[in-house]
Length: 366
Image (cartoon, rainbow, N blue to C red; front, side, top):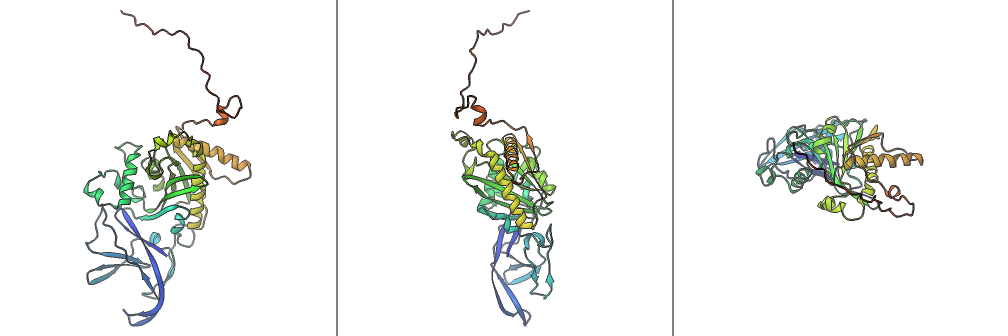
């Protein structure tokens, strides 16, 4: 059972390590099961109220235990619907507790959202001060400031990546803070590898949106334009980088590598839709009721091409991935079949008309 403790702009995974039969020494009575957990020190937050220096917080099923020096106190868990992923007896009272998730009768298996990724990481965000899954508190941070330096290295990379791909007005940054789970990692399907961000709000509405990425930007570029509104409405959202900035590579250099990376963009959007749909089904016990695609500029082209390929899948007897999509100001990248006008399997060079004599217009004086 994997449990997460959120603190400010970071959360740390705490995992049960073993279960054994023994005696509850605090009450003097026999207990059928005691659970041993690994205590994890949580990073101090950059926003909201920081924990007292030296505190160690450990989440164990029904309670959160805070140890400070010689004193131990027990408080209610922050959010059992997102941090607890199992049901079972309460070893403190003997009562049985059943936690209900957002869909179905059982709590979601949020660890299932990470399956299939290289370097996959899951973090829960509680909202109300930590920026939520939109990371709205990251926009005003300045690199090198005390608030920035207080973030863990992984979160600093998110701030840098988000600000490197700003697509919205600096005067209209997101302010919503939606609680939910965030997954990052790299997805590889055949020879196609793309880095992604996958977010599911706690109040998940059962629908998924796959976002195309504009320009040659990274997977964080849609946080201030589309993602923040979608997650506030309950949609799960997955965004990839089209393989353009893997490992921090400059996207413009990738675009000019003479390997025509745009030929894979439509297929890569389908990869995202299929993978994320399967992960949601595994986590919540129900397939998404609808999967949509949306994208701007190069992301708009991704959507259009993905819908074309999805239609071909349907004609071949495969189920459709997308219920529909939005191509927002999409560019047009013709493929080799369109550019091969003489059907010799080679792109036909353009045939420009010969220039005729051209005279610059003269300006008349009055």
